[in-house]
Figure 1: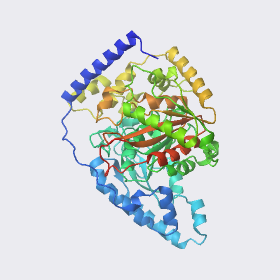
Figure 2 (figure 1 turned 180 degrees about the vertical axis):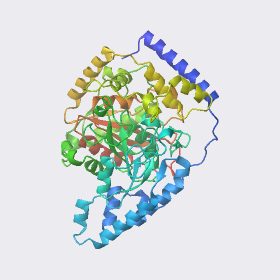
Figure 3 (figure 1 turned 90 degrees about the horizontal axis):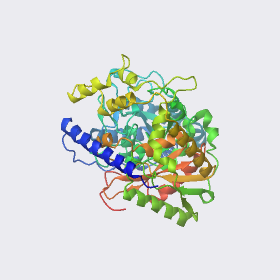
Figure 4 (figure 1 turned 135 degrees about the vertical axis):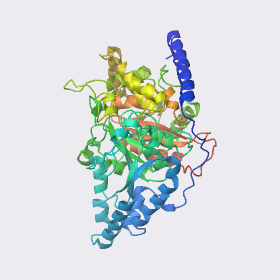
Length: 533
């Protein structure tokens, strides 16, 4: 659907204002030294093996857990000074736990099958997003006033992964209060993309995306309320899954859910190898795993496939990069050639309002009429709410404890209408009905994750609504698997969202395994160069 003249004028004005603000930002921001170093290539073969294969090797005593954990510690120490992804480690405790695993295996008399059934991730290293409670580790989400807060318990999905034998190595960076697409805060600093250190790894699970892509971890855990698993996985060329809401527990995360956020927030697995997604999700779902029928075999040839190349021309989002349009077409061509299916291109007009729908629903009250906790309150905890305009003045003088992104979100919050706009409620209800009828229980949809590959640091401040490509799927409550699709001409990861109907998580997970074989999956950032796909 083409834009009207008014919408074109509004789009031009929006871009002009953002360009002016970008120039002002560059003028006021402190200069940082240019970064030209590249990550070293992976040299230890243990770092190029999936979690499930590592677990098997450990059970069979082909390698010890101590060797695996030490290999990942060595890699983190090698790459973290460049990417600043892991903000607090527990290496000494992890090595002790690995030694206990090796002793357990040595004394086990029931055989490998018993260990596999009881402890499927026994001895495998794990990284954890800092917003999840990991006992004894920081749980601040980058807020300076929470500097000394340590988790006293494990968040349920973390506890379940540990119970399955995984060994946490540490916690990874996030955006301030987990509400921005770049992992930057004034407590831990800024995290870099391993494929280009001058670019963002995404947010809010950007530390996870960066450390996993850099081969400093093999599996990790993230959360997603607007794309916080999928954007980091896209920008860093790894796999991730936004689970159907209500399946994996969101307890003991910070900030806690309020308003209707619980309906849109999903915890899920992040990893370099597609085969790890399903077993990780099965573990993280705990007593709710049966809701997803993950053990049911998926025949890709019997699925119905759809593709949407863009949002239809929203004035708030950037046009989709030509390379991303091209790679999505290549996915369609491969599916049709390999599986003998017909991929139907569809267009849903309501997607033009993705940002407005997401923004509207994020402000709605819960069933008791209680609105979401104000962002200014979260920024000020444990004290009084901050004053956004005062924080902006302090930021301009280099005195604020908060990032420009957080201050901007607080300013936007001040401008919200007291009541939701009925038009956007209607558009969401219509879109939800259309998507449910389209996908059913056997449909899979391809949709861009973001209009562009990983932007330069701070650039999302001036294209703040491009996350709408992921955010709308949170409001629709759909499961989505993020899949890497090789590298762009600039050497940056490309990818696509694979979407299914509610509780049909096994479908995009199966497609992810296929796409990994078809397009090569994760690429070592230490060996990649700018080239054409």
